[in-house]
Length: 394
Ligand SMILES: *Cc1c(COP(=O)(O)O)cnc(C)c1O
Image 1 (cartoon, rainbow, N blue to C red):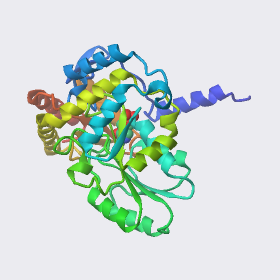
Image 2: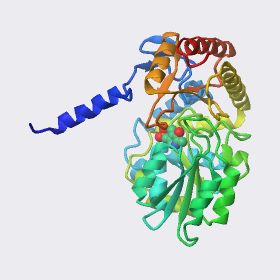
Image 3: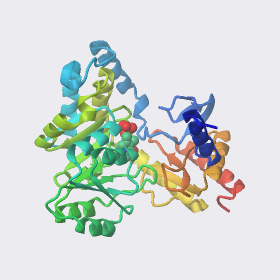
Image 4: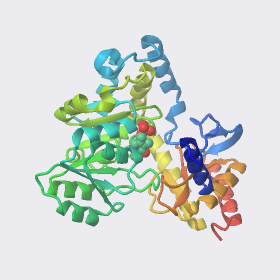
């Protein structure tokens, strides 16, 4: 009997289900708040990337609404055609001032920024060195670039150096790292990466998706917090996480930004961001620069949450940030843990392969500056109860 493409696809789906790796959507309301509704049930939100609680902030709402009424719902075209509404200029000026860099630009999302930057800078003559745990958008950018690809062990500078040594210094080399790793919450060894980049004449790009708004005196990110802004070639980050809005940025030298503007296909061939998004980006930058107490609150909550889970015997890995994984191992057990926590009113999301390595399925908890300490305390007690019941801890 002949197999149709439909049979093949159904078989693939069944295989995913069998491995507990199939994904389904759940109706989520109020995800911008510390308490959300998942399929209609109220739960403590320990699953969003809205770390500073800005996605529900009235000043962002107001800025978005004003921009919407001033410029319309859609940008109507790409930025190089007629989509470059004046809110772009305003938001990019705020970005450049905030970061203290020569130049910068705003892109539609972190995903399109990463695939655009990497494929514009690199081709088959060059080599890309990428941390094993870098975000999927970086991996896709590498594939798109057709460049040679060396994956170095997670945060392992010795391994990276050994790989860099194999390539001639005159060929273009790009080192890429997340600043904060999205599934582990640990921090890249930025100083060491800068050292190697300089020694081996490579370009260094840092993705600050989970550190923008969170680190640095004005939330500029980890590169600025370590005063490495003149030694890192490309800082990329997003407005979609800590800044509570949407879109992404790149900052760097003037000629780099001009080059990217001319070459990034994911910038050239897509409609510009809606004006309302740009309005909220400008408002968010203003707020993260001044409201230090949000970062302080977030750090305190993160430390409390992580140290409590660790003390209970959970395996949280090397997390040092607001991203705190509880590593369970098997997919089924992780799904069950997530389901039980949801029954207890905790929005805890299971992360499975291929997002994380095989055998390292986990619950990825994230805390928010706007959480109440008492809510976190009660959540920890419930997580401990479920953990004991399922034999994850003693
Ligand atoms: C979320 C994320 C992105 C993608 O950003 P979006 O704006 O959501 O497209 C890129 N890099 C990292 C490290 C991320 O965590």
